[in-house]
Image (cartoon, rainbow, N blue to C red; front, side):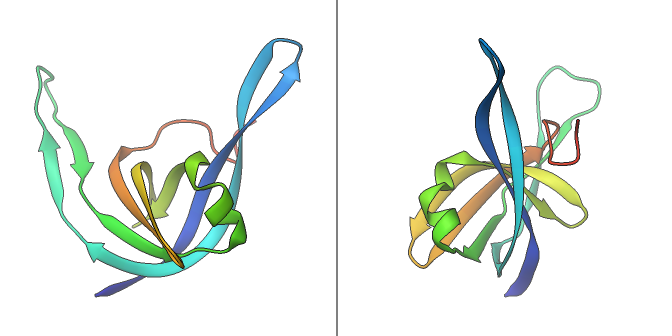
Length: 110
């Protein structure tokens, strides 16, 4: 089983101006294990298929992750940011299922 260390991005909705809400991303580092490692090509009517992964990463969760697991947006893995499609709570761990490449806001974005 491969080991994992990287950041997880949590999206916290905040009101920047009256009526305008945005996701403010908070990144936190976590340790864990890669428990499933596979890829698949997304079909469809595109010239180039989307690269999707069906990986599962189990991370050791702290109190913050346990209380805000619903706000997990992405995980850094293999040098890229990947969407987290499912989160399974198995205390003291969170099992994160990955999907496609994440292209939303990050903590470094303005």
